[in-house]
Length: 232
Image (cartoon, rainbow, N blue to C red; front, side):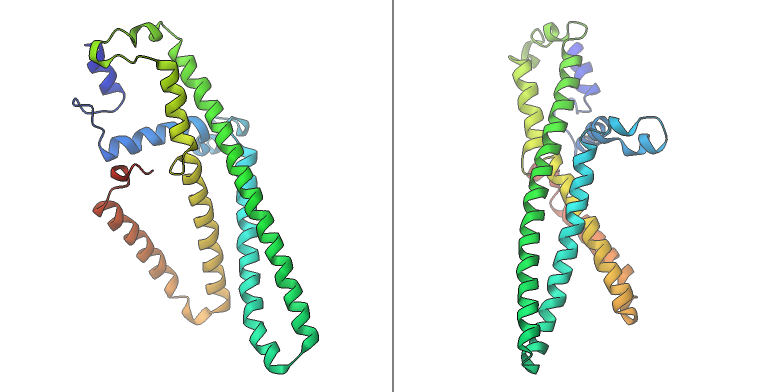
């Protein structure tokens, strides 16, 4: 039956309930449509085909600046006690002014990062909406979607808009998932770099930190799968 075929092609079980693996496969398919970096590296797609690439690059830059500001902030904080002990008023004023400047810069990077995430969301919503509408209006699919009995969709156009907004624009959507990967990647890189060069005697902790973090993530998703909590 057409309805059964559609359910199978959408990666769902016969009862309509997607498994965790099927849901993740669907997400990977959406990501390939939006931001297929491996295809660009293989030369199968051009760089401009990555939706919102300029805003993603800007978001990476803002995260790098933010991590640098935080590192500098902590370094200055450790100097304050030493300066106060020496009663060096000139150095104390200088470092306080530096901390104020870092605070302003951090607020700027936070606001700029939020604006860039908004631009990523807009670019991705535009790409997905255009793609889904192109498929929807092809081969009289709009007609068949209203003649499947219990599987009918009363307002497919509205459903497309709602689903794309839910997938991309919500707090647990793709935009925040991307931001999480960017911030975590930049933060881990900075932490490992500082540990490796500033505390060479503790370098043995680096593989332990990676193993612990990854194992903790796997256990959490096994104990409470993200899809059960409507998260990506």
